[in-house]
Image (cartoon, rainbow, N blue to C red):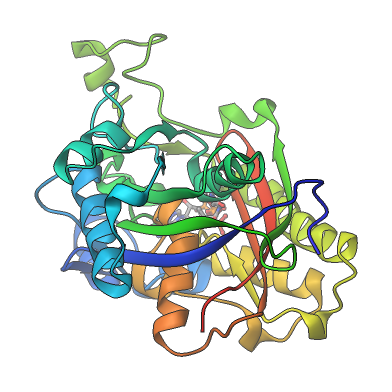
Amino acid sequence: MSNSESKYNARIIAFGKYVPDKVLDNKYFESIVDTTDEWITTRTGIKERRILEKGATSDLAVKAIQDMVRRFNIDLDTIEVMIVATVTPDMFFPSTACVIMDKLEMENTWGFDLSAACSGYIFAASTARAFIESGLYKRVLVVGADKMSAITDYTDRNTCILFGDAAACTLFERTENKNDGIIDELLYCDGSGRNHLYMLGGGSLNPASHETVDKKMHYIYQDGKAVFKVAVIGMAEVAYEIMVRNNLKPDDVAYLVPHQANLRIIEATRQRMGIDPEKVMVNIHKYGNTTAATIPLCLVDYYDEGKLKKGDNLILASFGAGFTWGGIYLKWSLD
Ligand code: UT7
């Protein structure tokens, strides 16, 4: 049962995904930077990632939403709010949410972008939950979409091998069943981590200039080792804590749905939870780190493989820039 005092819960009634066709495998990276397939595979678990050659984050998102419409016959006019989690908006403003709504002619919807990096989907799902549980709205669409290739320096072997482009979405709907959908959440920020993972240029601190371009300030910078140390603890602890808070034993958990940044972080989280390896959703080998899209992309892939069933207890967990991290206990609502 949900631990919130609302008479409503927010459950997922539809979803969709989109990954671009263009594949960059580890061999390709061997040809452009000093790396090996072996290093990338053992250090990260990544084998391939998808790249959007033409278009922007909104185009990824539009295709994911169209996929949802095809699968579930959703009338987009019934969606009241759209939250787009992204760190690669089409532009600073207007929001990517507005761009998507225009492209899909969604005239009954309002919405906005949410910036929480790799925790974007979890923070946006929590926001959707709050909108629904407050009684204000019945249907809220959460989109996780990132065109990471737009901010990746393909001469930097530390980061370029990690990221890919993708979008996935889940539609949350109000239910009066308190034992369905989002049951619990735990969200955290620690701004002191902001110096380890960031993009310096283009904002009000360092507006775009010849100098910011020359200094490669419009690309992701990550101190991988520093992030790794806190990510391992942050993601493992939040997943464990949410299990304990909800009296869930390892046998009660159907799946851990982790942010896909590094297989070793995912494995540490699994061990802390005490669950079996087959209860962990993993698709990092296919897509790399797609930032806000990783978690909903896992949900869609595992559903498509017939591995998810109604009532499954899922623990969603993330860690990302900020630092931001969080966990959600979600009861799966679809057969
Ligand atoms: O999603 C948002 C949050 N982000 C994360 O959770 C990512 C957290 N960090 C990580 O996943 C890992 O730190 C990385 C995968 C980014 C790096 O793995 P690592 O085991 O921490 O490697 P490292 O950064 O400590 O580098 C080890 C060595 C270094 O060489 P030296 O200094 O030991 O000679 C690097 O220069 O590996 C070198 N290296 C590479 N070698 C081959 C770094 N990148 C590469 C590469 N190929 N692509």
